Image 1 (tube, one colour):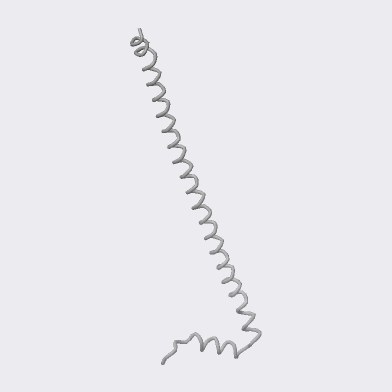
Image 2 (cartoon, rainbow, N blue to C red; image 1 turned 90 degrees about the vertical axis):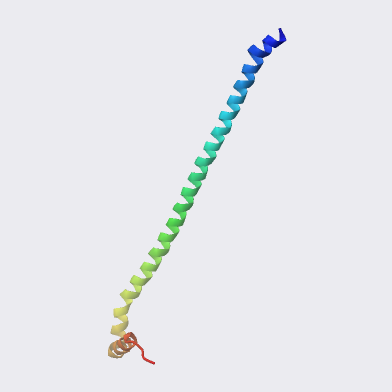
Amino acid sequence: MDKELIDTERRPADAEAFKMEQLSEAKKIRIKKVLTALAEAEKRKCIGEAEAGSIEAVGKAKAEKMRLKPEDYQQYGEAAKTTNALEALPKFS
């Protein structure tokens, strides 16, 4: 009678428990992979936003420099234009 009980009740229950345990582990692994991918995506997004902000700041600084250049020329007149032209020429040793 014990052998029949083991065959009909215990082994199927053990098999079902093992199956549920395996499914649970697989689900944990999938969740971990998804969370890792989401973290990686967020990391890349943050890096991209930081790089974009840096590029924007450099661009604004260059634009401001170009905007101020004519004012400098007007302020210093012909001497500044001549100096700037001489600085732009290639230098020979």
